[in-house]
Length: 504
Image (cartoon, rainbow, N blue to C red; front, side, top):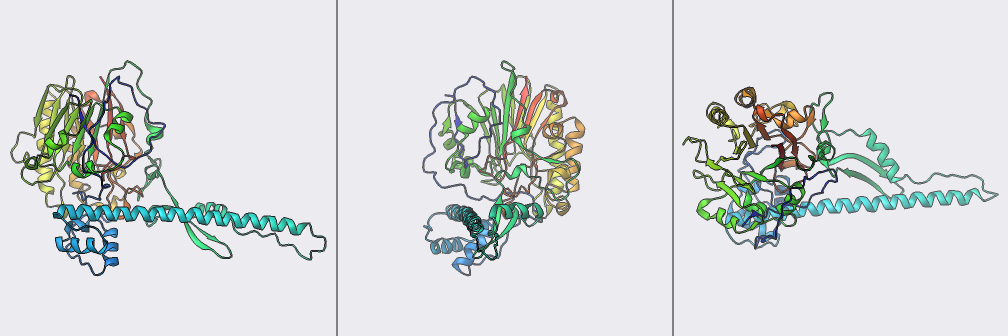
């Protein structure tokens, strides 16, 4: 009976430093989700618009030519969402991809194709780098051997022992001189390697970009979050604890289509007890929830879902647990706030757990007033009322980068949804000033760690992100949490999961 659904995502490195606390539970065999083979497409998300990650719709899209059309959507994947059915079919036919089905199917097919092409380009660049380095090193070795041969000739008039430039040496030398600027993209440093036949620029790709301090205006003492070194060792055997994970999946149907890794493996690595989800985008009318329950894994039989009723395929939250809660409630109990499926509350023995997806202020900040004058105060009153009974854990995508350390480009986003002065002040006044503790910031006061990266311009590859996802806990739990973490290597969404280990 115990089950949790199979969420696939791209393979990620399993860091040796990531500790897992054994809990003596068995994760059994899983049921695969049929007919879901394509790789993760670049789904759009209602995230903050910014100078480097403008999420506004672009209405004027023309497919001038096959090559230009593909390049256009590669440069800006969000354009795919606003293309017409005819435009989608035209470009899909031009690249030899079947153009049948609904608009959702066409969008998904084009996004899968674009991501595949981008991956092929990266692989091609990597192969070229290896080839150039080998050729340059071979020339260097041959030059050295030739010089040695000449040195043994008695009547040589003049000896020139000047080998070709070593690719590795020159790369290292120039890498030290090349700063990581705003336009570096996924390349940390560039080295120009010249031989008598080859002149090429070699990029050095950062394999774990979250370990690179990326910030427009870093302060003295700030360092990048590195889960390999910053997560504490596991609790002593026998210590009672609960491990919570939270993840904005940016569309659960799309996540389920991923090849490779699944939540089975994530569960084995992180050994979580409860998983909170946001932005599931499920529709009760399509029986999405019931279909997902058919592809569950052993170990987690308790799942609770709420979907948007006012706008289909929008918002949505869930709690999935192997611990049976005492009670479950949906929404704030206020009709003006409860039509979008933004809150699920589960009551456990020693705390309330809320999986929450706070409304985004939107393009043009059209919902800013609603956010700061209605939603935030109502949520604050709700959790403070719960605190009268037992401590509260509020987790999810709270759609606010509270401090400048929580966003790559603070100066360029002063009027972007998620970083306006009004939202930041509201976040502080309604939650932090009322006794709730930001667990990650409490554990890592000078650490730059992001949980959201926009798809445009490869924000994740350059670690240009926002910290929008939180575990806020009642002050009475502040000395009981063991680890508040970010899992930046888990892909599949524009957000990464976050975790909290709480001693009971």
